[in-house]
Image 1 (cartoon, rainbow, N blue to C red):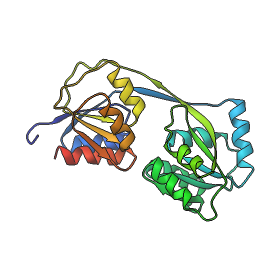
Image 2 (image 1 turned 180 degrees about the vertical axis):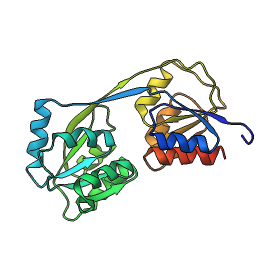
Image 3 (image 1 turned 30 degrees about the horizontal axis):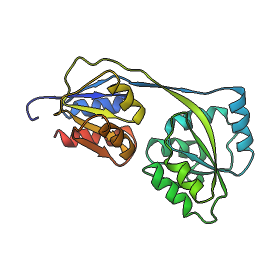
Length: 233
């Protein structure tokens, strides 16, 4: 792509510094959100969160959206043992709870569950703050090892499909929901390179097309932008 800018579509909103970084490296980046998430702030959820906050619980976050939804519902900083994904999810949790509260962090839900299974002492129960379209990997693996998983739905995800008229050199996907939303209204040429956060998102893309997929092992916008920059360098 030397001498010309690669046209990139991102299927979610990006923070300003990440957009600027892409531009600085010669990418023409367009963001069109294909999903919308909304925190659940009902009295029932607030009561449930406060009940969990009153005990030294083991809790799990695999999404920054879940963290952002739960924090406003906390009456104080609880004494939780927290397992979470790395990147911005962990960063926000550290800001609020401190580094010592993070019992473990990992790059995806499966490896996070495996880390919980190696904990000593092994928790008998975990509270999993998640969205209404969460993946099954983590709760299934923990339940297979007799760890009770209490799921607390903290936010909802709605698809917001758009019809894309422009041809792009690459498209970024951050979740299976965004993949479903995109391909519900669009088809693409076989030479378009697709970028995915994690194996689950990549597998969802594979269910629609046979295009080349470049997968980011770690969550977060910065890792994805770096991946795209390196590819089109």
